[in-house]
Image (cartoon, rainbow over all chains, first blue to last red; front, side, top):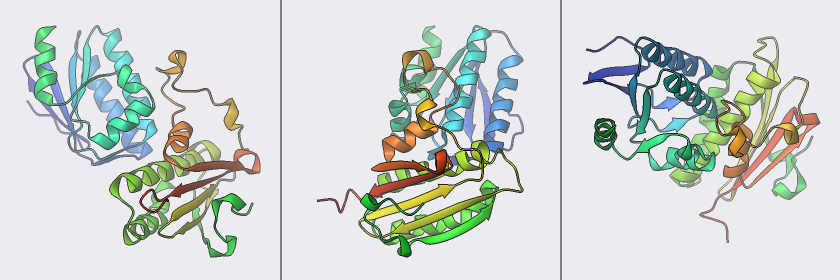
Length: 121
Length: 148
């Protein structure tokens, strides 16, 4: 099932919502708010949501987007769900490392590895 | 405030641009800086770092300094050569004390949704200097490909 969105491409794989970003740059405040709102909408509609954010298309990320991801992670945890991130390029992963957010998020090299880790839960 | 003397640039060499308090209006000077960086031979990682720091600085000015007030302006000054890039972003807000911003990498702050912009600028740039009670930030990045 694919849902319309200006910023996100959302597909369902079993119990997991797999999200890809349409924008290469997640920088604009308005876009970040809209992305956050769409992702929270996905999470709020079901108990125990399982969400994979695939960053393969993303090559720039503002700190406000990191804040949006933290808020999303809290929402997912409140719903007893799981949030995983994958395909983060080397430059953006460095941003996660500098901010120590690589310790906060469950980050996988590839979407396939992330999906396998959902299956192991 | 003039360019800090230890940034190694003559103040008269800087380009001055003032734009309305709207992030979309910053795109043109930003694109100019990025094209100059490419022309001067900066590598992709350094351009990524400078773009990130520039975005954080102007976002802070528009959102936090000028409080998204469209009647205010953002003042930019910049200089690019093959050795270094210098830029300044000044807002028309009340200012702030950078030392009052909590360390976002401390364990107790790791899950706070905001406060990472300043430390990212500090991490990625060679020097960061605040002036005008926090209304103005100066950033210097030396080109690692040219630093001896």
